[in-house]
Amino acid sequence: MTTFFKYSFVLLWKCWFFIVFGCYLFLFSPFLLVVTARQSWYGLFFKVIRVWARLILWTSGLGITKEDAIDFSVRENYMFIANHTSILDILLMLVITKNPFVFVGKKELGKIPLFGFFYKRTCILVDRSSVSSKANAFRVAQQRIHSGLSICIFPEGLVPDDPSIVLSAFKGGAFHLAVAHQLTLVPMTFLDCKKRLPYILFLGGPGVLRVRMHPFIDTTHMDTSSVTELKQHCYDLLYKDLISE
Image 1 (cartoon, one colour):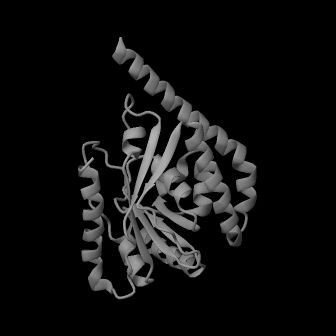
Image 2 (image 1 turned 120 degrees about the vertical axis):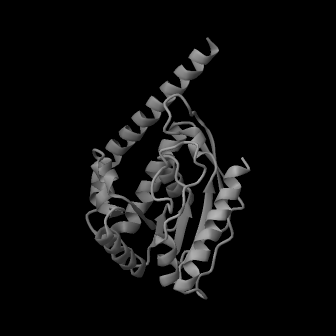
Image 3 (image 1 turned 45 degrees about the vertical axis):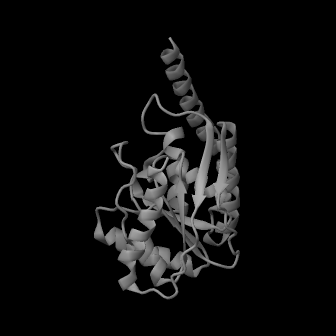
């Protein structure tokens, strides 16, 4: 009986989360439609979408704790990276990061009703099976960096199909971009997103989402020969955090 109530609670909470997600998206849609009308208004869009993300987490009973928090410079562009295990990763990154950034993400998310409409208008979409799509995404990311925006990439590329995988191998795009444009790299470990909202029906629930922020990495002294080592260093940082939990 205890197991029945536990599973029922988890299922009801997950239903509540997605209802909240959809309702807030619908309510914010008129504002989002206006602030996405021009690329020059992206800063305003980012402020609105951060409020949207914060309301979803709060209404769903999800708090945030930042460990080893470091202040960002408002005048600097960054490359934000983190592990990717849940839709919560997107919301959490928006809430904890004040510097306007653009997500680079898979094109499939553009098919989600309503969410996909705004996703395609504001994010950099990439088909990871297409070399030309990846090259175009790289070019668009360069343009956004030159316009003064930061970039966020989940370097695993996709949420692993196998929930037992702690951390999938990193792709190189985030690190090539960071080095090419001398962006300060900000590695973060999201410790609880997989626990709170995994892609497993009867697992999850409300609680605290912990973020471990690692020391910023200066890439101004690096070149393309440094990318492989940089990628492995960041992978090791996040993997060590995750296996210690």
